[in-house]
Every structure is written in C-alpha cells, then in structure tokens.
Length: 298
Image (tube, rainbow, N blue to C red; front, side, top):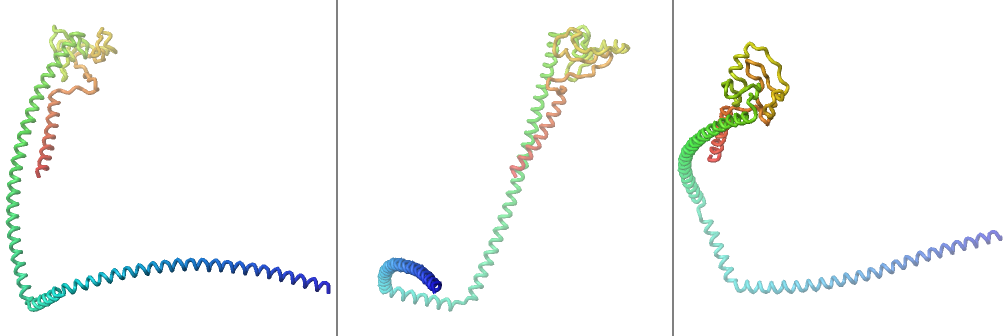
C-alpha cells in the first residue's frame, strides 16, 4: 500500500506540473492574442482614418466634377443652336457626297494624273538634255584645263631641268677646281696611284667624279713594266692628308681599280646620271599631279 500511495502521489505531482506548464502556455497564448487584438484595433483605426480621408476626397472630386458638368450643360445650352446648325450641315454634306458620281470623279482624277505624268516626263527629258549638254561643256573645259596644265607643267619641268643642268655643271666645275686647289695645297701626287700630278706632265684618264687616276705618259711607260707591290699606307710617300691616306692600286699601264668613296659610303654619281634620275622623278611626279587634278575636277 505504501508503494501504491507513493506512486499515486508521484503521478499526482507529475499531473500538477504538466497542468501548470499547460496553464502557462495558455496564458502566453492569451497574452499574444490580446496583443494581436490591440494591434488589429490600431490598424483598423488607421484604415478607418484613411477611408474617411478617401471619402472626403471623393466627395470633393465628385463636387468638382458636378460643377464642371453643370458648366458644360450651361455651355451646351448656350450653343445648342450652333450644334443643331452643325448637325444640319453635316447631314447636308453627307447627302451631297451620296449624290456625287464617284465614277466620273475617278475618271477625272485618272486623266489629271496622266496629264501630270506626261508633263513630268517632258520636263525630265528637257532636264536630261540640259544636263548632258552641261556635262559635255564641263568635260571640254576640263580637257582644256588639263591640257593647259600639262603644257605649263612640262614647261616648268624643262625649265627646272635646264636650271638643274646649269647648276650641276657649275658645281662640277667648282668641284674640279676645288679638287685641284686642295691637291695643290696638300700634295702633288695622284690620289689613286700617288704619282706626280704636277703641271709638267699632261693629264691622262679622268674618272667620272673628275679625279685623275693615272697619267698618260706613265701608262705608256708602264706597259712593259712589272707590277709593283701595293703600298699598305700612303705614309710611305710622305703624304699627310686624309684623302691621300687611302690605299690604292699602283699597277702601271692600267687604271687604278678602286674608285673614291664619299664620306657617306656611296660612290659619287655623275651629274648627267643625277639629271636623268631627277628627270624620271619629275616625270612620275607630273603624271601623279595630273591624275590627282583630273580626279579632283571630276
């Protein structure tokens, strides 16, 4: 019995604890429902206020619309006669359209369209003829201008070439004179073979650049002579200039093999070769200039 009583008391205690937990949960739910009810009441009040404001706005808009409708009715009453006249005129116009013969109108429109097409065709033909005539005149004028320009350009090129020939000839003479003056001031020997090139022996073969490479008398004397060794430096002959310091062939009876090289490393050209190259360059430039002019005028 004691054990049964203890188990019953334990069960009662558990039931009480469970009941208390349930009661607390129920109270919490009640509090939440109460809070939600209060929030809903607040939201309802806000919604009611908005509805009241909207109702007042609708009433105001309705009153304004009613006033405008009243004004429109007054205007319509004032212009009722004009509206009736407009209706009558519209009806008369509609009746007139019904009375018109649309087939005759279509024929008249087609005839007017054909007359307009013929007139436009005639005007286009006249305009095309005028344009062809103007184009032919323009082409003839262009040919005259191109021919005149070509003649003037050829004259200009010939004048430039003549001036260039004259200038280059003078420069070649000046170069020959300067070479003789430099050679006279530094050495009396040929810059190729380092032989005597004084005024007593006559000049022999002269290179394309105007320099003396050997003397005619030495060439005759050296026909049967043995070839000598080539000097390694011009200092053996006591020549101190930069031009005379180069090494050249000293074989007798034949022109020296190397040719003086300019400071830029190129072989000097003859002035007639330079003129020929310059003439070709001007000819190409003339053709290109005429072609560009024709393209621009076209």
